Image: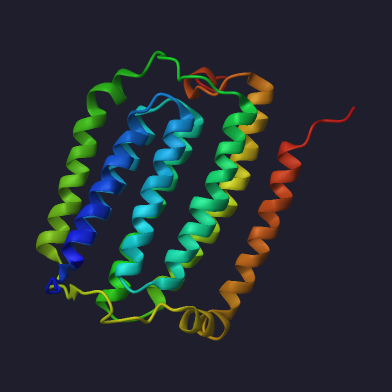
Length: 166
Length: 105
């Protein structure tokens, strides 16, 4: 059952990712990314990270993607125009990406110690209770710092995006 | 009743590597700022999956906390980045990265 669910989600994630980088229209790319995020949320759930699965759906697939789609519609973007591309990215790009992927897979396969097998329900440490307790004890300082970072980001976004008033 | 079949953890890492490579490819090949930005989000998601997979491997919750922080930073980055894209579009009228080349030699 775990294997079937994993394979379905992995196929959905990879196909959505491929679709994202192949589509010419930004809206299609954004919606494909929502598909990737939904599949990843199911995988987080399989790995016992319940809280992060919910956060993935709310924060990423909800808030961040709505922001993206608002901006795409605000700018009224059409299809991406084929433009002059650098020969370097054209010729060297794909082999480099494939080599990078090969190295990553090789390291995962060969250089790391043997892994635990993942079975749903054997470890549920990622509930809201545990996350919250760790966040407000051990990681209290990073938590407070990151709230300041988010505040600065909001102020910066407002200042960058406002209209200039003469 | 289907017998439970555990999934090797390395499969999750393979999936994460593939998604990260897809993000890199999109970042290199696409010329639209928004799509490049979406590729960055895809790479961040792939890294999150690795964090959570290793959190399961070590049966330790700290990896999920890091993943949570990555999510928050990604949200902040999306807000600021999209504001910058708006400003660029207002000044240049284009979103193709190779048409914004004032500083290019």
